[in-house]
Amino acid sequence: MLEEFKKTDEEIVMLTIQDSSYFTEIVRRYEKPLSRYICRLGYFEITDVEDILQDTFLKIYKNLHGYNSDLKFSSWVYRITHNVTIDFLRKKTIRPEGNYSAVDESFLQRLASEFSTDDNILNKEMSTYISQAIYSLKDKYRDPIILYFFEDKSYEEISDVLKIPQNTVATRLSRAKSQLKELLDSKQIYE
Image 1: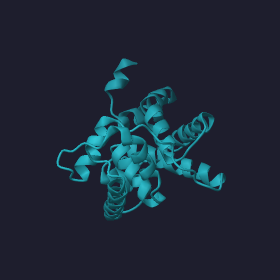
Image 2 (image 1 turned 180 degrees about the horizontal axis):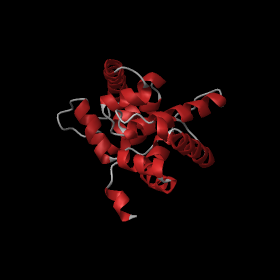
Image 3 (image 1 turned 60 degrees about the horizontal axis):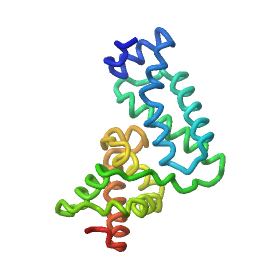
């Protein structure tokens, strides 16, 4: 089964439709990134994340025949994950703050470059505050920020995941960045 590692997601989907044993490769590829994404969308117990992930993979498997190959498979998977997670949160009737995921050096560099800080790096010790600032944003701004910065998704992919036009993605990211810059400037976290 080593040859599956070399196949594209779309090729694995076609193989899975013919032979369900290939679905394990989809799970292997997406289990960790989707778990992280779920945690960033809301604060969950480990068992909740596992339940959401299980429901997500079940939905992916059941709907593989309906996958539109015009879309990136990863965007389609993230959209399903997003919807399953939001449904789970709605059942809880509130959307708790996201899980403050660790902010690594590459994230800090990318955030600094987005805010045109002339190669200044955001103070690494402020990563908790940065996470809190992100999760203080409204959902419509937080979700694109999480997908863009943490999940490294393009505007097109974010559009596919959130089912909003690319122009709306651009607008929401711009507004979110402005709000984040204000929050970060108010704490003077630039060195």
